[in-house]
Amino acid sequence: MDWKFLEFIKSGKLLFIASVAVNFAVYFLGNVVPRMQNPMIGGPIDFYSVFMKTAEIFIERPANIYFDTDHTLYRNLPAHMLYLVIFHYIGGQHALNLFSHSLIIFYVNLGSCYLISSICQLECMQERATILIKRPFFLMAAYMLLLMHGLEYLFGHSHAQAGFFALVGIYYYLQGRKHLAVMSWSIAAIFKLNPLLWVFFFIWERPWKKLMKNMIYAAIPQLPSMIMFLTWPKLITDFFNSNVHFSTEWAPLVYPVSGTISREFSYLFSTDIVPFAIATLFMVAPFTIYILYKFNLDKMDKLMIVALSTIAILPDFTTAHIFYIAGLFLTWSSVRSSLISNREKISLSITLGIPTLATTPWFYFPFISPFYVIPLGYILIKVLKQSRESMVAEPS
Image (cartoon, rainbow, N blue to C red; front, side, top):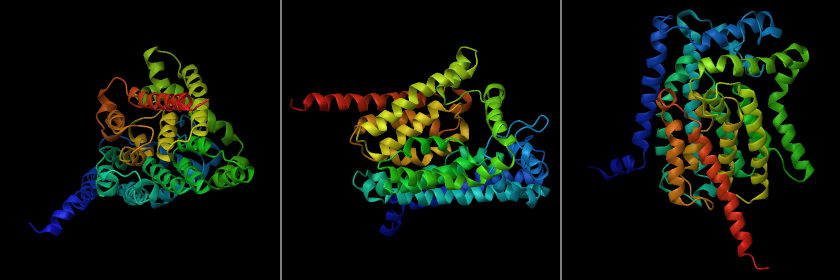
């Protein structure tokens, strides 16, 4: 066999090409084309029952996008409407707007792969690189082969777009350009709210001028939403009420399991999620901030701590939400850490990988949150233990 072809295989390029083909032909075309031929196949999907319905309401009654008769399922920031109305005007004949939206998701996925490759090539990553960082095509292939892509294409969600901008922010953060990182995560939050917590955790910086710079850059992507909130003040209360209503009324019906510990506690004790969510917020958020700014941790470890803290704090983290952290998980699990040994990293990666890289656990496992909260707890305890040991070792 030709040595160039062998190197082509060893580099992961062949696997990546195959993964792109699977992503396009199986996940994308295999889910969208049947609906173009028969729009009613498989029953209603979120793209039409939530997003396109809300886009129509936005055009006719913009102040009512969150609550219009029985329509209470839309929870994104209002700026997301500026993206969705494009597909409303494309029209739903033969599911053309769903096809167009899913095609964009495909290109977004390719963009995420490019970002994974770019992150792996950063000097701070190469210094602690494993063989996977040096051969990022394997990581890119793993991303494209995630079974969850099928649900993303079929239901017309925006998790992949949020994941793309999350990766953009990770790239800038690792470069030391925090202002561009928080701006990227702020853009991601337009598609899905979760990355707003990333902005909150990382925006703090000294001196005052740097903090103000971060705040300005984080605010820029939110200007459309701010303008819409000021134009239609009703949207402000409706936005919060819609999210609370969904979390308390709809989520228990829609999500059989959740990566969020407070949600699964509420399931376990058959009670309201609110007390558990508030308790988790006040336990996890201050502790996370203390860990981030008190200790000199690797940037990748900081990113993973924030991602896992976000999953623990927010009311729901389910199924295709994994696109927020899939790229981060793949790169974090493939780089050496000064905090976590290689053996520990493997164990943590397996634990996190079960729900992040696979689809079936979300539908068959009774509890998902331990796969995220246990690694978070372990990493935080590891930080404190290492700090205590270093203090003991210091001469008095």
